[in-house]
Length: 271
Image 1 (cartoon, rainbow, N blue to C red):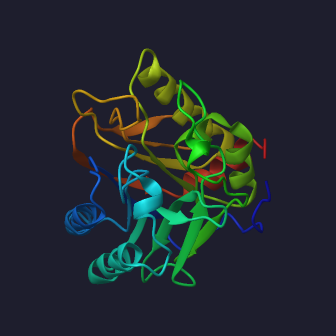
Image 2: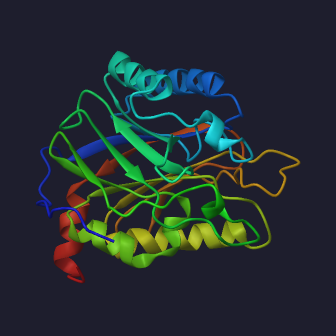
């Protein structure tokens, strides 16, 4: 696992308005792109600078991912760019792109007019080979940690099962990430909600950064493939949950204080 270049903790602004769009994606990428447009508009109207969608927004797990995967210049990604430009916000969304070995990459695309360089892409490193699932049968793991800059703010990217790996979040913190976006499709099951709550708080403390975790909403009758439990949240650098949704679809919008990152790192210098 290779860490990105280190950036300064200093931000060009003291606050950031972040949103988590807790949706339920279907098997249809076209319909799901419509949801991206709809919920991006809602987040922008609520004043958000950054809106985070779940993992597998492009198509839910259980879809034939090889058949729907698209490159980063494909119609789904281009549609996300259009939504971000139309509303002047940064959008982070989970999608699938073809891998060289015949599998797909579970990719986060971060785009928007405020992103330095225009966009960034992160391919999920830690695959969900647990609880009876084998994501690696279809998904090729990534190797690179990714951060990007937005108006002086350094933002890191991680996906779902990555949250069980403290070293990834510590590395993002050392790379200067003040915010970590964590799109997920966190499957339901005994103890899973408690694990989710614990892990999101712990990883915010490991990175000493704000964590914006956007999950798929819960739906009745979920099968063996992960969909979601909801519980999207925003956690501060000392592990305090500042905002949380319930199980059903919803939009979480909250203002985060970026100065708390530098203050926490100065007070508790673990990085």
